[in-house]
Amino acid sequence: MGQRKRQSKPKEIHTFLGLKVKDFNVRISSSINHDLQDPRSGFYSMKDPAYQFVTDLNILGETTYPEEREGEEYSVWVSGKEISPGEFSLTLEDVQARDDYGAPKYRTYHGREIPVFEKSFSMGFIEKPTKRRPTGSINAWVTPQAASDYLTLLSSFSGPLYLDVHEFKVERRRRIISIDLQTNDPAEE
Image 1: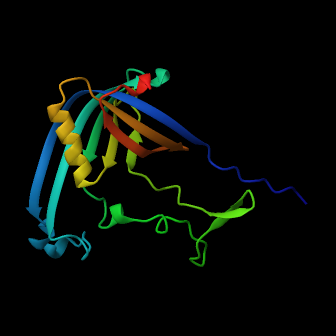
Image 2: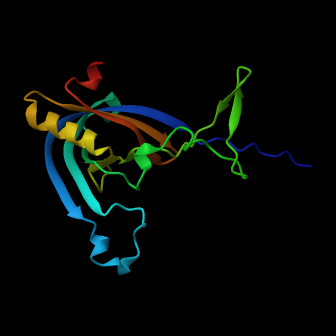
Image 3: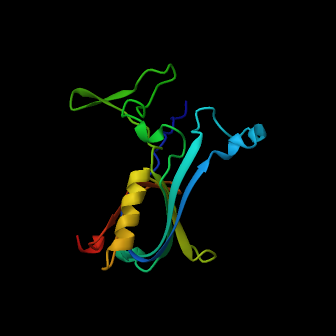
């Protein structure tokens, strides 16, 4: 009998990106859900809110950290809304991995059982710049309050501002673990 090849886990890479804010623009929208006007599209959930309030920020930034990615330009889209209703109220129990029977998964660590969480969970995604597309993109979803706080800092602070983005890469997919707008350069922390 031949030996079974052990499946290797995909390589996971964590990178912390520091970006200096170069420019930004904003769109703030309040509306009645467009599906109320024409419900024939069918691209909605009956749990969707009847009113929609969105703050979208588009921030242009250039990486200052890490050194090997310094100078990359990114268009950072931060949206103050949930991708799907209730997403921002998920608990750790909600994102715990499940087995084929729906039971919560655990693993043993130093003699005790600890929960296993879904790895696909994130706040958004990142696409690195390429030769054909020299400006990369960072797309993040945050609470409306966080988007409002970003807007307050962007519009009122007179010094340089920076984004600190925790990137989690598995195979070719880059996801966002955290995104912070701050007054100090993450490259100097």
